[in-house]
Image (cartoon, rainbow, N blue to C red; front, side, top):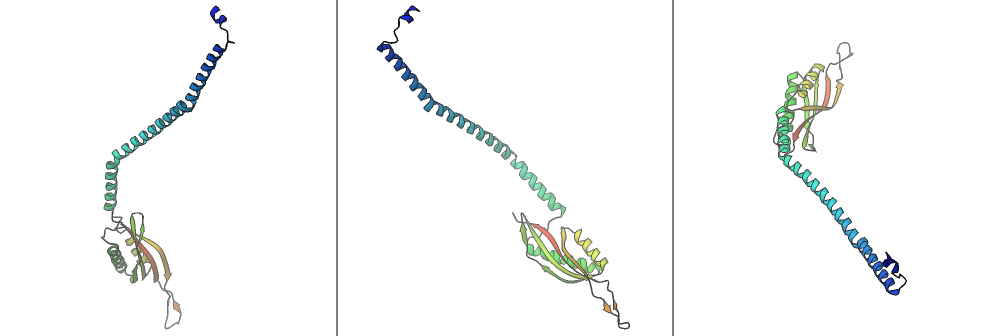
Length: 200
């Protein structure tokens, strides 16, 4: 204790030592602030990035581990859909269109109607499917029309009726009374739409 009291802080040698210690402390603090702190901060940042990448990698590994199962499930769903008869299984859209036109013609004739015309419209693609569209003109009474629509909408492959236009046919004039007699016949225009899978 007495020794501490005997140190003379006003002596130039002590002041120089204190100044040297202060400068050393300042250099150490600056070194820590300018070099060590950024290095530690960068190391922490890189460690966090590494942790995130490891987490994502583990997620991708789990997804890849299930990829065979997902592929198999997709194949089973596709097979089940094909077995349900929703899609036209012809090899080309031209064959699918011709097949649909023949089916519609037979449905109209079997119901007692008259087919005026059928026309294949351009095929449109949406997602993984081709939309096969046929424009149909026919005549017949309401019973014929009901039978034709029922046959088409319960068909396999699935055919959907779109844009239907029904107009009564003009009546004929009675030769004796010269009066216009109403007709039960209808002019019917509609589009029939079927679907095909795009080749993979």
